[in-house]
Image 1 (cartoon, rainbow, N blue to C red):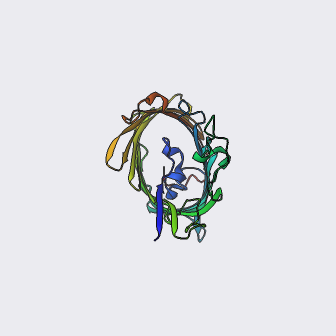
Image 2 (image 1 turned 135 degrees about the vertical axis):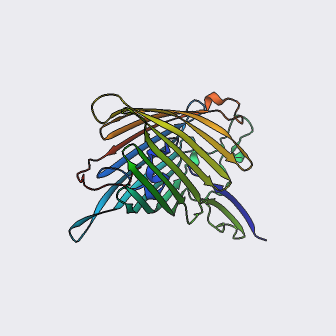
Image 3 (image 1 turned 60 degrees about the vertical axis):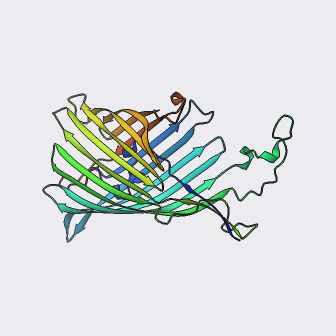
Length: 341
């Protein structure tokens, strides 16, 4: 008889999903007006409920290259990027680290409307580690005052690495200076790696299989920038994530208000909402408030999540905050146009 123990892992998420472009869709690499882009995002989750909060961060950089053929600049764009991702559960010293390389190509469909269609591919390595000294097992209880005994658990190696591959497609159009639109689709974890620390089959009993499959994930996103006056523009955004039995929907809008006559200085603010479906039920999970400032090439954002789920009795303790910073390098080729994000 062969026994099989399986589970399905899920990815961490960000409320400011738009501030971590390469973890949203590999094809977003190169979608900006500039020479390069550096994006950083940090999430601190449930600090008021846990002695050691959950921490997630992402740092990415992408650079694009204008194409030249026969001495003539082409409107198509090639982009390369790199992403570092980390997830920390400090209570158990359980860490996930990731490094990914990204390549994207954006084909100009129409120069008049600045219309692009891009594809992207991403590949790299995940590493998971855990410190067994921070774990306690039932057989360690001394029947008097604590867990002081040794354990007889057969523990696997506490370090696991695996490869990961993702794909994406992206479309953008900017028909005039007052309006732009984009939409994309990312398909992550194409190879669906096994994350279990245990070998498959088990090293002690080859008739026992233990797996922890990382489900493939669909990331569907769309957004626009609508200029309503000389000083105000609205940026509605939607992101749906589908991974295994779980679905997550993030939607909202950022208002961009010009705070001075000097170009490049804007106040950013807006509400966002997150709904989650687990197996059979779909409901509102969090209300998110976002504020930020844009100054020349820098974009700073701060957001706060408040849990409103009926499944949580003490919703006040389940809050999260995120801080993001994006820098976009100057663009020196004013004659060329770029896919927009």
